[in-house]
Image (cartoon, rainbow over all chains, first blue to last red):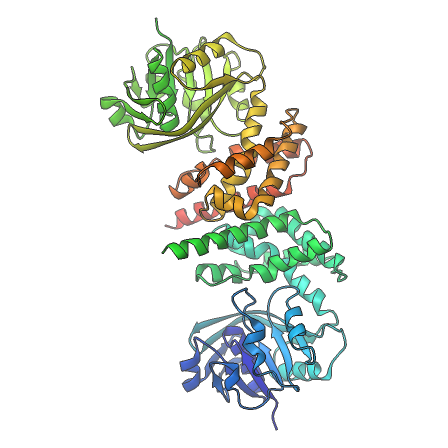
Length: 312
Length: 312
């Protein structure tokens, strides 16, 4: 019998990685909102710069996890991490004793509430390094990158994590298991913490313009994030700031995910990326004034967005 | 013969204080741009919450200082302090040996370029604490406050400064001479440095909402400005932060001048308020990370505004 995979939050990221697992032979079902009608009738059309085009025809297309028939081996959560999504409630009805819960989500310190709610389930924490868009309901473009990092908070190599990695590798995407997935999250945060809020608060600058004009400040925020990771017991490589800067310099001008959410009027991952990092700093008594400034400003901007949408 | 006053930049502030000097018996002329046609024919109509209504009929209404007939005893510069206004060029043709140059302008360390350009003229540095609007060409509303602080950088009480103060007092407005006008500028900056950029970068919050949600951050920025003033040799009163916070709490929700400029698509006084403060900090090796963060963000926002106006 094939491995049963339930993707919760089947937008661009969920649809793409779910499509890969289906390609690798898994029995993939999806829970989705805005794509429901199209996905139910036609599935997902995936167009990848690296892996060609294919169709994902999910076994079950659901509006809610409670409608799922069976017990998933892997429940893969791909929603954004924002205050308006209660991730525990969202998945609870489909979590069986055998279910491995996999997060493919942004941010730092985002695992705790799921660990506490499902203490007996294996939890795999995952990060996607990918540029991929949802062009229309059921239509996903994979534009660049694609690497997935998976890890268990225990640091142990769990067979079910290895098995999942092998499925992804079999489908042709880079996938590695990190022995310190928490450090991997902090590494990604080193990039996200400056570029995401700066792109939004500047009113829409792409990464190139930010870097060309305020490289020193970007570096300062990055170093603050490194100090927090260090204080939390997950020291990052010494050259991480240099590497992120060099990588960004070589990228084409890029709109961050937070900027795309902002422009579309969607909730931003301010808390998962900045709020959790600042709270970790406060817990560890690490001073991070530039990061805190960005967090303060994002909170004020979100307050202003809420108040003006109440007025309209 | 009456004292000859030339107001350069006769918008709301210039028109109001010019109107007071005319009331006090001075021979007032104005240089203005957008109000020229109306001012030429009808003068200014001033409507003050405290001092009633009156008409300012300037002796000369000019488009450029070079058209001024005579030698002004006082040239009062009331423009904004921004990179796109060359203040020296703007006033040069009307500065006679007898002319006292008076600045009624925002910001810190804004006197140097004028001192250097006109080393033999007396320079009076002035700050207005006023809420006043230009409702239409030639129509000025004085809504609240009105106090003027004047001072000489030397700290000496110059007779021409005292005489000007007496004119203002005679017209019914509060006016004091500060023995340390530089410290007075830093005091005003303590308020401006957090509230102005926070109101803009949040997308339009008024002072109340900023204070209610991020008082700690506001205080932190205020304390940074105090440290810079201190390092520059102009220590501020110990209770200044407390006083500014209490004052703001008691004010009705207020849109900062930078926010009004932002909303109208006008150039903002980022450099005069934040840039000069940060440069003073760097000169004195004072760490001011929160203030610097605000300055970085304002620069990026202005870059984005320039690039999008080039695209349109």
